[in-house]
Image 1 (cartoon, rainbow, N blue to C red):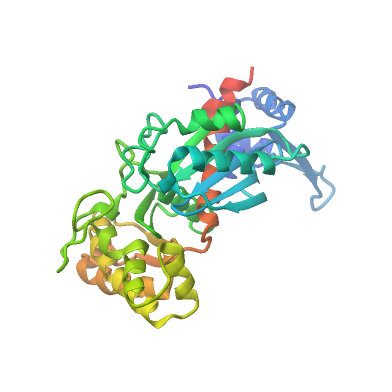
Image 2 (image 1 turned 45 degrees about the horizontal axis):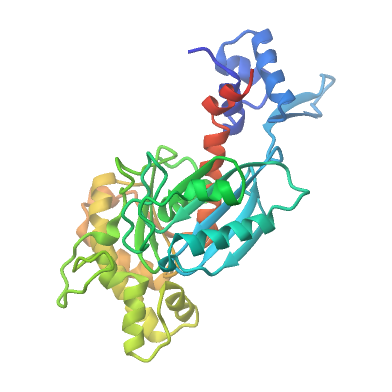
Length: 380
C-alpha cells in the first residue's frame, strides 16, 4: 500500500523519523512526495518543524515533531467509589483534573451525569479543540460496541450506551471506552516500560482485574474479557459469595472489598479498597498482614497467567498496591510458576497510581484519532 500522510505522522510520532531525510530513508518515497506529505501535516497543524544549530558551517538542521498542542483529550477514570476526570494534551500531560465521588453501584446515570458536569467545567474556552473522550470502567467492555459487557460489580451498566451519553452531554466527539485495568496497563507501559514486548498489570482495588499489553498494544480478548482474573475460582476453606453471584472467586477472598470486610471484623472502619489503602499507608498492622495474605492468593492465580503469557513485566497497581501486596504475590507466584516462565520476569509496583488510567486513556484516544488510517482519512 502507498505511504500516506497518516503513515508519515506515525513515523514522526514514534520517533522513527524526525527529519525529512529520515522519512526519505524510512519510506523510500521521492523527495517531492515526502515534501507533499509533510506539507499536508504542517498545514493541518499536526506537525511542527523546528531548526537547530549544527556543528560547522552547514545549514541548520530541521526536525519534525508531533504537535502535542494541536488538540486536547478529556478522560474519566471510573473506579467503584470515585472517578478522576482530566483534560490532557496529546502527549498525556495533565492540564486540569478533578476527583469526584459518584458510586458505580448507583448506576450509569448518576455517575455519567457527574462526569459530564466535571468535564464541562474542566474544558475552559482557552483550550485547543477537543479531539476525543476516553473513559475507563471497572468491568469488561465489549470491543465491538464499547459498552460494558455483563460487569459483575456495576449493576445497571450492562450494554449501557456510555459513548452516546457523553456525546450528548459533553461534546460530539469520538468516545473510546476501556476496562480500567486495561487503561492502567497502557499508562504504565507508556510511562515506565515502553518497548517491552509483553506486560501484565494486575490492579487490586475494590475488585481485581488484569490488563495485558502485547507488542505495545492492549489485548482485550475476543469479547473484552481478557485478564478478568478476579472471577477465577480458587480453593478456600470458607466459600465466599462474590458480587458476580458465584462462590469462591478470587475477588471474593483477596480483593480490597474482601480485605475491608476482614478489617471491619477487627473493628476498622473500612468498606472498600481505598479504605484499605489508607490503612496501609498509615502502617496498620492488620491491614499489612491481611493484604499480604491477599497477595498470596493473587499470586496463585497470576502464576497461570505468567506461564501462559511469559511476560517481561508484571506491574502491581490499585488501592492495595504496596510492599505487603507485592511480597505476598511473590511468595506464591514464583513457587507455582515454571522457572523458565519467571527467569527474566520483573515484578514491580506501578509508579502512576491513579494517573495510570488517565495516561492510558490519553494514549488510547490519541492512537485512535491520530493513527495512520484516521489521519489519512481526514486529510485530502
